[in-house]
Length: 394
Ligand SMILES: Cc1cc2nc3c(=O)[nH]c(=O)nc-3n(C[C@H](O)[C@H](O)[C@H](O)COP(=O)(O)OP(=O)(O)OC[C@H]3O[C@@H](n4cnc5c(N)ncnc54)[C@H](O)[C@@H]3O)c2cc1C
Image 1: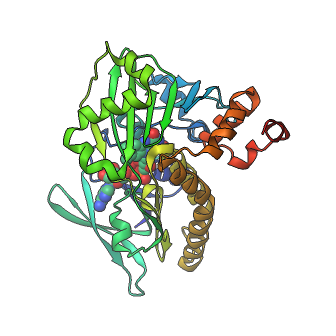
Image 2: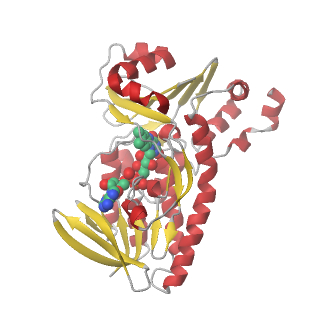
């Protein structure tokens, strides 16, 4: 009997297991994927996520993998050019964009070092229930062999297409149409800051990562997905040329070092994230377009909140645990909703005049620029921008 079984061992599941184990719980961490495997993601971790890694004692380990800090950001749209550094949070002014096979392995290693029992290649297929109907464990398959394990709590950290959510019949509570599709690859010898370029119908970004590579990504409206995928290479380069012409020139003598990665299924939703004996974290609970690069940082925030919410209830009365899970789920929905709405706004790829006039005011002032970049990083909400200085400029 485990205190918790965590299904999914990436940026939501592995730190959940880690923090529960550090709190003294017996935890089993399962993933159908292999240890150290890659996954679809442009993997930028904004400063709130970096601060979480620092609190968990993992930031120095991440730095030691050779992942470069990303201190400067550039944002261009229409005639606006914003450039500077965020003020940051908890002393963390830089973002990082570690390759996922590095980050996810580092998180699993930390969980195992904290006493978590980790099993790769284990696909969860069913939820076990006790005679009251409360979830009481999982059935899974490891290399063709079925097994069951029991726990007081089953945590679904198994991504956007969560099996735990499906088996628990967790309904969507908020659901919006897909807005974009994304294509990206890695380029060698193209030094870059975090650079964001926007125009109606287009979004391009550069993200420096491991091995002196720069990830260059291009977003299109979801309505173009069927057409773009017929010749994705051409569409990718054309989107860069139209949205970020100077970057297109910089790429002229360079070469991509990987195939083009594609994602046409960027769902936007919240699910009911808790029930009797089960809870969801990360993309399983809530998924949004990747354009604002919030998924990892938001998952880290959820993980810490979950571990705090269940503290003192995991080895006691199940009804108390379930009540704590319900409160956690509702608080997270409230906390994440403004970022979700801001993301949908960005993912419409339609920079409107009202926003452009605000940005023109922001670009003329260093302090407003820093606040704006804090906003991009998810540190402050849009309200923080409305200082007396901004109002005067407007
Ligand atoms: C194109 C793209 C770009 C993105 N860019 C960024 C970015 O720059 N910054 C950012 O913060 N976020 C980004 N995101 C979002 C980010 O990748 C996700 O929010 C994040 O990966 C969520 O982590 P997770 O652990 O919840 O789920 P996942 O990373 O999806 O991990 C879920 C795990 O569960 C396992 N699993 C699934 N089903 C089962 C099962 N039945 N049994 C056992 N294991 C199972 C899977 O094998 C997987 O390892 C991007 C996403 C996409 C698609």
